[in-house]
Structures are given as C-alpha cells and as structure tokens.
Image (tube, rainbow, N blue to C red; front, side, top):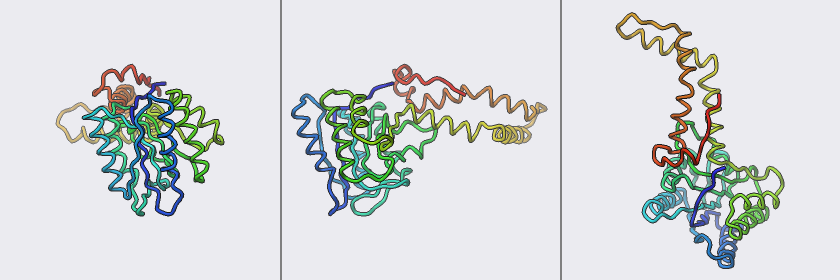
Amino acid sequence: MDTNLFNQILVIDSIPSGDSNTAKRLFEDIKTLSIGYSPTPAVHYLRVESGDQFIQCIFKCREDAALQNIIPMLHIECHGNEDGFQFADGSFAYWEELKLPITELNVATRLNLLITVAACAGGALAKVLRVSDRAPFWGLIGPTRTLIAGELEKAYRALYLTLLSTKSSAKAVETMDAATEPGMFLRRTSQDLFKKAWSLYKKEYCSTEALEVRAKRMQNTLEQLPGKLRPTTAEFTNLLVNHEPKAFERFRSTFFMYDLFPEHVSRFPIKYFA
C-alpha cells in the first residue's frame, strides 16, 4: 500500500462553547509529545467558528502547500452527521460543499492529504465521491458511530503517540485499533475509494439494462445524422463493453492525478477489474 508524506499536524477545533473541548486537550498532548520525539512534524492549532471559516482554512492550507510546500495532516473536531459537518456557531457544511476545497488541497499536496475526523459519521465524506473525480484525500479516519469524548481521546491519543514516536502511519493505525473496540473507526485510502467508486459506476452504468439504454441512446443520436451506417443496438452494446477498460484507465488517470504527477503511475498501480 502507498504511504503519504506530511510535515504538519493541524488540529482544527470547532467544538461548541460549553462542550468538553477534546480538540484543545489533544493539541496540547500532541504538542508535548512532539517535543519529546523531535524531530517531528510541526503541530498547530486553529479555532474556527463557522463553516465559512473552515473552508477559508482549507483554502489557506492549499495556498501554503502550493507556495511553501507545507503538507498538513488535518485533525478536525466538530459535530456532524451523514450529511456533513456542523460547526461551533451552528452552521452546517454539506459534503458536496466540502468536497471541492478538500480535493483542491489534496492536489496541492500531490495526493498526500490525510484527514482524521472526530465528528460523528466523519467517514461519510466518502459517499459523495464519483469515479470521474480527483481523489479528495490520500486517507481518511473517522468514527462509525457517536462516540463519547473519552473514547475519542483514547483512540486519537494512541494514534498520535505512535505516529510521533515511530514516524509510521501503519503502526499508528495498528495502535489505534488496539486501543478501541472493533469497528469503531472507519479507515479509507484513495485506493479503497476508487475501487468502490468504480464498482458503483459498473453497477449503475454497465448492467445489462443500463448498457441497452446507453446503446439505444447512441443509436438514436446516430439516426439524426446523414449517412447509411446504422449499427444495431447489440453492436453498440458490444462497443460499450469493449471500451470499458479504456474508460477505467481514463478514470484512474484523473483520480490518481497521473496527468499532473507522472510518478503516480507507479505509486498507485490500480489494475483494471471487471
């Protein structure tokens, strides 16, 4: 499995006033640990009150990545549900709103963006992904259900302690798993996301029924053009089936940014599967 690079841990706090502020406590723990295990990535804390401020933060991270080569690992603490994030002032940002800014940041980091989320259902960010998109992140870790503050702190403190002491993302995730009950956290890599998105594309557009609809649409379009060549629906269907591996290659190239970063061809060598 591919690994990612980052040189900053950014804790983004949007926990409502009056709630237990696990974000600030976690930041203070990580900052202390980073001193003990130096050299480590820089550790920063940012308070945001609203969805607009959060998106501006992402834009600033994108600018820093492009101009200063600062590659952040984002740790986001706020409320949320299956539709998106809710911020300290009560404002809400849907996944569709967040996908583009986060994807642009991931492009600026050369597909190295790792996001850890303490919001409920944080892993649902992946549900708005389409196979024709760029990858929105290298990896995502988020809870699969509502967790109490103590559970979140225990899990993420284990993650960051091991990350800073060993410099290994894989070992950090293993330690986090050992500190929590099975199934408490969802983990997704860009490879996982692409495979899922391709499978959904196949189900929606490449079933027998879907292929027939697409073939008939192509046939109807051709009938509007001059000429005598009139392939049958079956011939158009075969054409679509034979074209599928090329479609896969095109989607893969866009998703993993082969066109922007040629080295990603070997970094993300996802093979075609039917």
